Amino acid sequence: MPEGNSPPQPYARLYRRALYDGEIAYADSAVRQLMIQLKHRGLYDAAFIIIVGDHGESLGEHGEKSHGIFLYDATVHVPLIIKLPGQERAGTVVKHQARTIDILPTVLDLLAIRGDNRFDGESLRRLIFTDETDERPVIGESNYPLHFGWASIRSIRKNGFKFIEAPRPELYNVAADPAELDNIYEVRPATARTLREILVAEPVASVLKRTRRMDQESIEQLRALGYLGPDSSREISGRSTLPDAKDEIRKQK
Image (cartoon, rainbow, N blue to C red; front, side, top):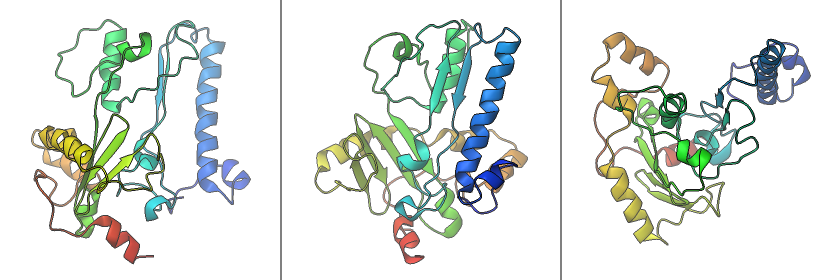
């Protein structure tokens, strides 16, 4: 568990040997209490509720103790639960990948609220209500390594594969290798090349695009939270000459 984090009592006491589990139990309890209150007030059946995780925790996977450096599924694959009014689509499991940037367009679409159509994401309506295949690519970017003088990392997840752009590139068949332990970059060069072409064609991550329109205070707040590196305004193109975070993390063991 990340240092300095601890759930409130009684969870800290009950889970004193596994505080991260205690944080999860506390979060589950908070959601449960919300649901109880909604039902008690007669609001639950008609409610439209979305619950999503902000990030996961590596807890030692790939050498990372918490999150922020790498873009493996341990930290970027998060739960997304949607409860529609009534019992509509109750119990449905959508297996296609979705993105957190799709949530706002989905809310506006399902509530029939007209937006300005300038979102980075798109509505999940088709995935929720139909059996259509929708292989929208999931783009990730981590600039936190720049704080340590290491190379930034970008990734793309599509069609069951994930390509990670780093000084030592990585390719994983996440469908068959969900723990991302078998780097098949050298084995599947054509797949890696195709995914990299899509990644290079994509604009730099949204948070970086928006820093150009943000005031300095907002930029500094993002940097203080670790979401922006010291030179994060530069676009990533080509192979970085900075050290690979994988190698640097391994040296610290």
